[in-house]
Length: 318
Image (cartoon, rainbow, N blue to C red; front, side, top):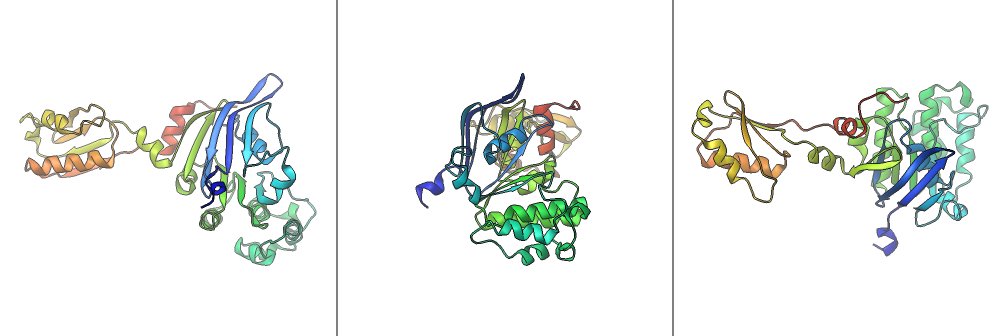
């Protein structure tokens, strides 16, 4: 691995952007590892689109640093454009152009494009190759937009709501294609309102609100760190009367936050704190050492959607 391979594929440092009296991006710092999939999440108006547009070179930041593939997207646009692919939610195709014609046009800008006919077939568009863009269904337009974004074999792809309006079959097809891009070493930055999509696809998640980063990490890290009090186990009802719950709490490893074991119902107990794999193992080992036969050991981890709503609020945005 060369030093360049270890550099972030996308990096923003204290980036700011305003439109009149509205602050769209407020001191955002963000780093994306090369060869990964980053899901950028946020409510409507949180600054996602402006952030991505600055990375793509469509909008210049007012302050701070934006580097994409080690380049300034504005000053070094000519060197950057051939190395990235962009899928716009609005489509970005000529309304009168046929689907195959549009894809071949985009492919002609690349020195080593994918085969257009193969890509049309892969995305289920072979039968619509001669259909004008404006007559394609919404889902077909989405898939053509994805094809245009990746036909040039980019190092980095920006996908804006890649499965919006797609049926289940087309959505799975897009997911498979995005995973294939990662296996080929392509970096993918996607925006989505679908939390299950972010959990399924992303190596890293960044949640922004009011133009600022409010949380980042892997889906596992974000859901685990914010799942306090979610480990439950069940055993004999006499467990608590023997005073063993206090003994269990005291026996948990010291490098974890202080924990408590409380009775939630007859024979059911809850351990406070995050439900990590280490704590699950310790509870099971402790019960075995005491000769207690567990009838249940479960976690109720919060979903990424729960974390997102906690961080950004549950009120409807305009």
